Length: 249
Image 1 (spheres, rainbow, N blue to C red):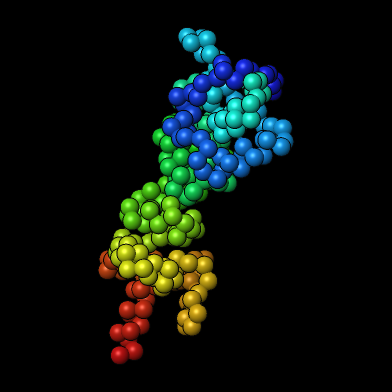
Image 2: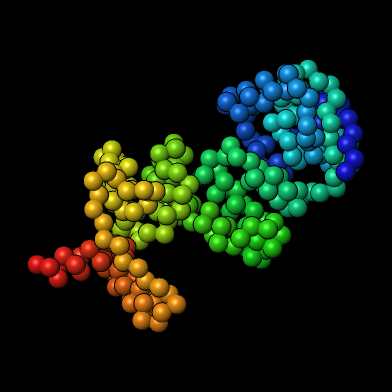
């Protein structure tokens, strides 16, 4: 990989850059990058391609690094020049952003969707090309199917990635119950009651039933419980509770 210094005033943000519409300098991550580069050198070069028509370089990867270096007063930007363009360039930009740790769960889910939409064979293609388990890709996509009110709570940090994926596995009736709870200020309590939070709330009493899928009878019973729960618009825990309640009355 050859790195060359390119004049900063010869670089434009490429159309394929997935964060091209984001302003720079407004969020904490931008400020941290500017502060870091004011004290230290750039460790990872940006990625650009040369556009024959405009005779300028188009930035594909490293938008934040580029703006932080420019703000620092650098006139030469260390860059790797690639020939990627179009869908391949956008996919590269998407994946580079996807592996960042500072993305919100919703941003990551949206980027996964765009990556799936721009990759041949969809989820299977993304899994094979980028080494991501198909189950992981599907879980990220499932977040985008949640009601808008819950997506807003994810964006605000009130629902974690783990909780969002767990909620997405629940029946729509449970999701709607969580929407109502969010409006009433009881979201955390309702998530604990629905079994989507790690750990158990204080004072909770539980009954643990274990189903071993290697045992035919256990698997049949578990599958039947799931079927009946879905027929009644409940998750398995709620359905089992309703059955027990009727039985002990």
